[in-house]
Every structure is written in C-alpha cells, then in structure tokens.
Amino acid sequence: MKYLAYLAAVAAIMFGSVSCEKVSGKDVDEEVPEEESPAETEQNDGKLHLSSKSSELVELGNTFAFNFLDNVNASTEGSFVISPLSMQFLLGMILNGAQGDTADEICKVLGYGAGEIDAVNEFSLSMLKQLPSLDEATKLTIANAVVVNKRYPMKDSYKTAVGKFYEAEVSNMDFEDGEGTSNKINQWCSDHTNGLIPRVLSADNVKQDMFAFLMNALYFKSPWCYKFKAEDTAPETFTGANGEDVTVQMMKMNKELPSYYNNEVFSSLCLPYGNGTFLMNLFLPEKGKDLQDVINSLSGTDIRSLRYSRARVDLWLPRFETSSNIEMKSLLSAMGMPTAFSDNANLHGMSDVEGSLKMDFIKQIANITVDEEGSEAAAVSIGGFLLTSIPPSVTFHANRPFLYLITERSTGAVLFAGKYSGD
Image (cartoon, rainbow, N blue to C red):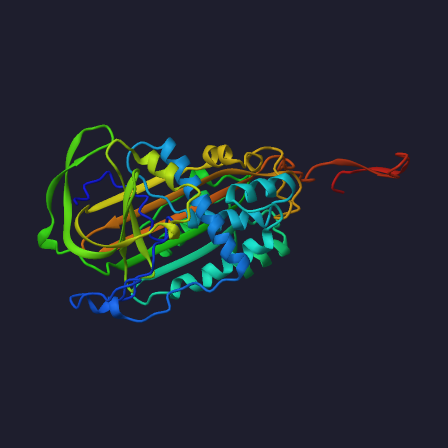
C-alpha cells in the first residue's frame, strides 16, 4: 500500500502527545526479524512513571491536543506544525497566576477540572523531569522562562511556583529598551531550540506598559528506528487538498513494520524513533475522506485502543520541512478562555501591581524537518501580559519656586503654609 498522502502533520512525535505501542526490539506478540538495526534491540524502560492523577491528566491533555489541532486546522490554510505540549506548559504557568473565572476557563480549555492547579503542576514537573531522559538516542529539551518588566513587582509566591514546578528562569529586564529586551528573549529562544526558532519578538512587541512575557521552548531530534535509504528517495506526485498535483521528494521503504491500522476513515502507521519511546503517528484519510474527518474520528479516542498490527508496508513519505507562526488569541478565546484577554481578567496571583493585568497575546512558532535520517522539531509558545490601567508616568521636579501646605487629611485644615524660592 502506497502512503502518498496529504500528510497530516498530525504526525505526532512529541508534538501531538499521542502514541502507539512502544517498539523496543519486539512487537507485542512477535520477534523482530534479524535484519532490524541495533537501535531496535536496545533495552530501555522508556516509560513515564506518573501518579494516578498525572496519568489521568495525560489522557485529558491528549483531548486538548486534538481540540487544539482541530481549531488550528480549521483556521489555517496549507501545511502547519504545532506543539500541544508546549502550549500546555505555557498555559500551566499562566494558570498559576490566574484566579476566579480566568483560572476556571484555562482549566476547561486544557480539559481539566476547575481548581486542578496543584495536579497540573505535579503533572508538568513529572513531564519536565522524565521526558528528556526516556531515550538516549533522542535529544529532547524543555525550558521555561519568565521575563518581567523591571518597573513592576511580580509576586514571590508566583515566582516560587513557576520555579519549582516549571523550572522557569525568572529575570527582570528594562522594557524601555525594546531592542535590547527583544534581542535577549530571541537569543533565549534560539539557545533552547538549537537555533530553529531564532526570533519570536521584535522591538515593537516590547511596550512600556507590558508587564511580562512567559515562554516555553521545546526541542526534539531523533533518528528513525527504521531509516530510509537516501538513494531510494525520488520525485513523485503529491495531490493536495485542493486537488492540484505537485512534485515532492518522496522517501521510500518496503518493509515489515510493527504498527499499522486502518478503518473506514483513515489508515495509520507508527514510525518509531530511537529505542521506540517516541513515534511519528501518521494518519492518511481513506478515499472520500479528508483530514477533518480524521480529526473528528480521533477526537475523544484513546489512541492506545487502536488495534495496531504488523504488516509489510510499501511506504512513501515526503521529505519535508514546515514552519508555522500562529497567533493564538482568537483561537484560545474560541476554545473557551476569552476572559484572560479581556479587561475582566483576574491575574492577581501573578502581581499586586496597581492596575489590571490581562493577556495581550499568545502565539506559537514551530518548525519541523523530516528526512531519511529522522526528524528535528522545535516550538516556542510565548504569551505577553499587558497592564490595562496604570498610573501615568509623570515628572515633578521642584527646581523652581513652589508653594507648600501642611494639612490634616480628613478636614483639610491648614496647619502651615509657605513658599520656597531657593533662598
């Protein structure tokens, strides 16, 4: 069967936060043929060890992943790549500063119940600590940061929470120096994505009435467990969603693979990386179906319940690179958290600064490259917070003659009055 798709960069890897059966040298029921590479026979636990509550949040997080995917797909033309996990980390940090309806809405969008902040923090810390060490062949890094306008105070309790559960770097910067601040933020993003995401902000994004920027960076690079041969890659026709044909470089493999599944809506194949802990999950619509049908079919489905089995597959997969820069404000508002972006936002868990805080924007920048050797992908999710009503910045230099009164506050009674003329 030829996999000549319009590939859902539904392709999960880490970025879709869904998985098939782990492949670590053996199928569920069969021995792997002798021709398999050494990486496939390497023994590694390759499992997350989570509390029962955190395990529940993983399943709820997968529901968020497909809701997120559904909304992005509905509003985006052409290819895109997103990271639900990166967005979950960012929203988790925001949740620690949110209260009341604002917090409840964020929990709802994430798929969690109201008041689940402690459980979300525990889950986030477990993922942060364990994911990067599951496969020695895979380089996976997760980083979080908070950059605060040095003019305004951030609550110590908030800094403690994001430091403890998200290992977030918290720093104060001069937002009057928009160029310098944006350069430092961009450098942080580049450093934590191996240079794949070198720029997320311009100097114009750093306004003096901004309170802070919150960021998550996620980086993934891993070799295929079953590598494609470069000499087999050839130009082939790819039919887009609009029915137009284009020529792409198609990687090819004809091999017995452990994880194939199909139904009336889609065919699916799992391609493992490294020791099999991470996988690219491919979903190809059946004839007469489209990617929206696939997303609808998968929404609310536990991917682990799909009965994948071994099959000899004539596989064609495009060699591709995709970059996305998606503004998420309207999308997340439509998903159920509009209050965070309004003047009614309650973010008092973040700061007691005089005036009101609200989210100014959220966006995600992501990039993925898929070739014969494996995949490299990165994402940065960033949110900017705005002070909606702040005391005006004024100058009062008493460097010329002035009057003064000493009064009693409640009555206004004048105890003393005078003029100072510099003599």
